[in-house]
Length: 380
Ligand SMILES: *[C@@H]1O[C@H](CO)[C@@H](O)[C@H](O)[C@H]1NC(C)=O
Image (cartoon, rainbow, N blue to C red; front, side):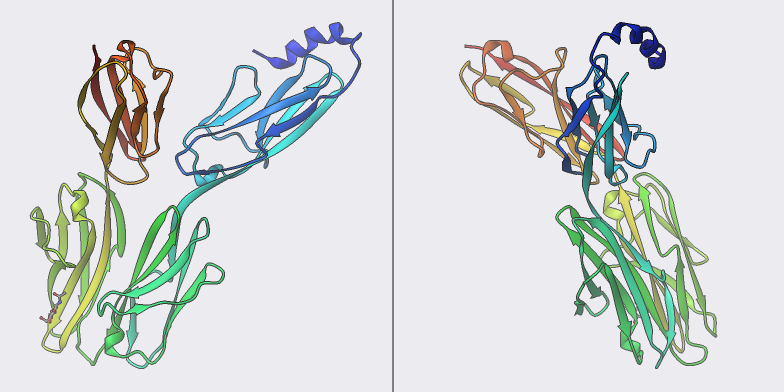
């Protein structure tokens, strides 16, 4: 319905009402939720001449996120599945014939760190040179950073003051070669990026590099990694996986490693090794395999007597974060007195015969969802 035409029709009725612009406030004034959670803000009108029209906007005047829902009377704004991009101000504008007023709420979305390495690897450095690499992390709460060198398992811990953290290596020696990890950690998770530093030897020595240096793929995809090597005589290339054998569905043709139908267990670091008579050079690539959830319930069915308590745990494998939602098949709403937890539990302190039925747990992540049904029978 076109609201402006409503206002036009109603205006003549208002002439007798005192001309006061709406007094408006928003509850809560600020909210902090985790990524994936939902949040609601209520716009309250204290006084003002009716009719009052409510409108929600973002603080920057951009359109509301597509997952924003506004309640029937316009007062409640709900954002389901909050994302870091939804952070910021939300403004409720209340308008009547006498004028308009606005109140603002602030949304913070906690999320795991995102990390970027500058420059991106791999880096090729000659003996005696120096190199510096910056690890730039965002996240809420602000993440702390840790550096590790993988090849020797030596830990390099640097201090973090302002989310800019630089690894500096001077007078490079062969033992500096390897994979350096920057780990960014906050209460919501740990994210790592890696950079490979190659140290060049004498003339003719191999120098390997892998393309791409890191990748995120979804379960079931086919992945190719290309290793290029310089050196004389032409180096021989071999592929391996750090601390694990290569997946059995792999092929190597002309330095290109192909993995088909990848699974979660194939995540990890892959190493290309280029060897000739002058020595060898290792190049690394990091692959993360993301998976949709696969949910199960414990127990998978339940027979109870009236007065018993009920506890069902819904479990899911898959990429985090995973959200659990419980409902009752055919009725939607859970019985009064039923509670659920973020960790996927359905709880009832005492059950009665009317609570019999089929309960459904849906586990959802960014890549899909999975549901499980649990039959509950309550009989004396
Ligand atoms: C690469 O090849 C060299 C020489 O054959 C060997 O010493 C080294 O362990 C290999 N590295 C990996 C990761 O396989």
